[in-house]
Length: 159
Image (cartoon, rainbow, N blue to C red):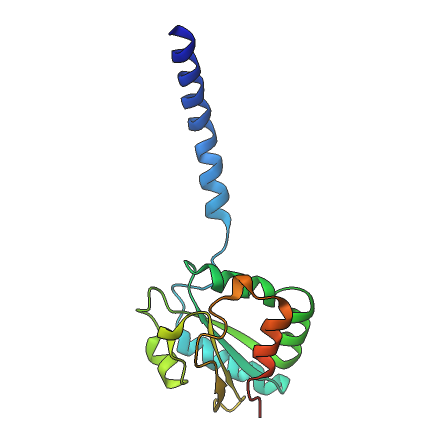
């Protein structure tokens, strides 16, 4: 009985010691989607950059709780997808929260968020909507390979 109590006590002390480390590690990760951002102001900045760089704007609608949104962001940040997307687009990530933020902006761009996130729209540097995903094409980004994501991006009109 004493051994059991000792083991439980040691386990509780170990958990108490590791708890701050775990919390610090979780807190240090920067969110992908800025929850305090002014999406319209950021869009204006992205359009200005796109105009200067002679690119289109890829607007990615998503949320930090969405595992597929985080997976798409990771895919777009490395390898062939990163090279291809940065060659063609200025990328803007727009937070949709729990479908209660920036939904008007998504609707304005023809992006039906209820079909799933992440969802994207392509805008010309002049702000004209050129195309958008309309049926949750990227909503399963976790299980999509790079080629499948690239196929979706290639299918979007860019001029």
